[in-house]
Length: 159
Image 1 (spheres, rainbow, N blue to C red):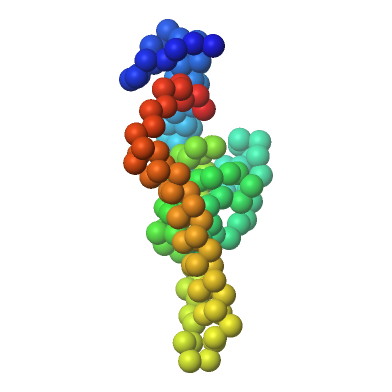
Image 2: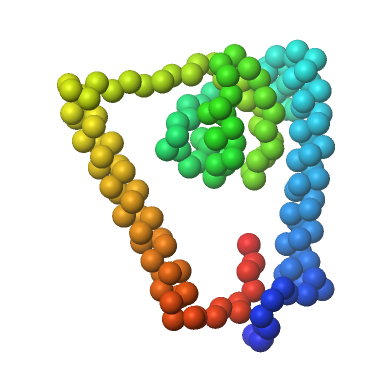
């Protein structure tokens, strides 16, 4: 449909303008909502009270280091990483890609593996690591090959 020169696309191009406007609105809404929720958390409101004031429900979920998605909310790596560093019993507000979350950590469970007797778990973990490594090689192989042969892609990035 057109030729796109190397570099940034002009802001007046409709796709670029819509994308930037949507992201700016999302970020502003997120910061306003985070501030309001932080006030409620600092005031000592319960999660039930906060949820009812926003006409939503609270939801319990379990996260671990290997999770990429936060329950059914989608890819929230920053939120998951922050949650894993949060202390048990504390409540924190996080702004993510898909929404703003008020997180209370009920339990921190640190699994232990006995290397001498738990061979089944060790084999499973080894297989998982092997699969993750294979996926990473496949995901990075194509971009590496493109760099080697100097393929230039001037298509606009539209998300």
